[in-house]
Amino acid sequence: MMEPRRPAIGWPWVAVSAAVAAALGFGAARWIAPASPAGASAPTAAPAPRGGDADIPLAINIPAEYLAAAKIEVEAVARGSLRAQILAAGTVTAPPNSEAVIVARAAGNISRINRQLGDKVRANETLALVSSEEAASMAAARRVADTREELARKGLARESALFEQGVTPRQDMEAARAALDAAQAEAQRARSVAQAAHVSADGKSVAVVSPIAGTITVQTATLGGYAQPQTELFRVSGAGPVQVEAAVPASDIARVAIGDQATITAANGEAVAATVRSITPTVNGGAHAATVVLSPAAGAPGLIVGAGVRARLHVRDDTGGLVVPEDAVQNIDGRDVLFVRTGDGFQARAVLVGQRGGGMAQITSGVRAGERIATRNAFLVKADMIKSAKDE
Image (cartoon, rainbow, N blue to C red; front, side, top):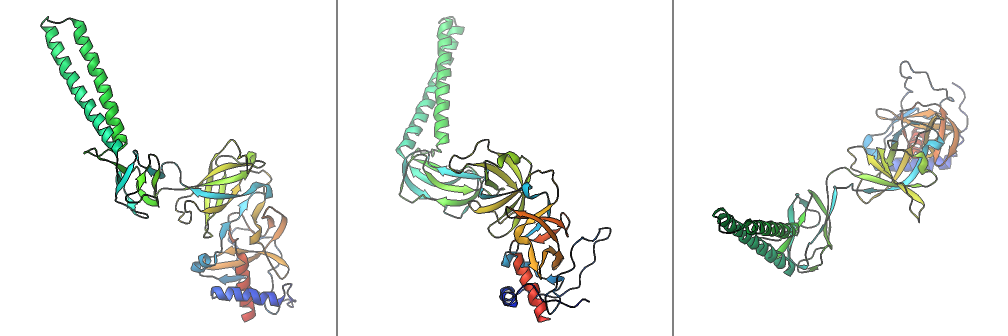
């Protein structure tokens, strides 16, 4: 073994980093370096980094439950170039038919509230009742129209019988038929209006009904309060998938295409794969940015409607190469390393870094596309490795 040389990292900083890792309680364990996978050429990288008075361990155990606690993000190494990555801020939204704003269809006082904030509701379930004079008017119009329809039907039957007996001319029967058609159309209109407003059978109130199944996320209805027509009383979010609306600068929008892959970083640090679903053809006048709609992969509980997220779009680029977030590249004893995810922790892998820019770094050797590495908060893995070397 070569004589260990003095580390490029000052020990006062190392002590601070070690304290951070100790607070997380990783309980690191030193491993020997694993062999390269069968059939794969060894990375053409610099020798393994050293930690001054003792070798820094090539691998370290970190329990999976601590990754979420420390918000250590793990992502796959992507093929591309610095130009093939677009960083954008986004917001989690509900796609059409996954969120409903519930309103009263007639003005009146809220006489009953059946559900409240946070409750699960079924489709077509009544959330509240509104006592309304408009409801009485719609119910009356429905009854009048039904009565006129019945009267016109009897008139046609009478005229038809008289015509068959040769008592009245054909035009009288045809006029009676036209009157029935008009009465039926009016009755259908009155019934549709009352049905759309969810007028009760007694005609005294209108029901506030949820069109979808889900959870009540907003409630402004107050018992006894006056509800104006089309004023939001409840909001229900369904249990279906969500989407992310990312703001992409106008200068970059031409590089984005439907079907491009993306990575969404949720508020809890979870990395979620996504696909570009659609792109708006115009940009916002104030922000000069277009909206790119991303469809996350299924099973992403960290994406909550209304939350802000970070999106990284992997757009097409023919220049090739590998790129990783710049935060993933750490320096140990003067050498750039990436922490590659193993079954129980991470392996320190020396790499050669090319250009940097836009929060990304180009990797020329040391890792392969698809290998999973620590990105966000990767410095915590580094701090724990240094602490393990010091303890040894």
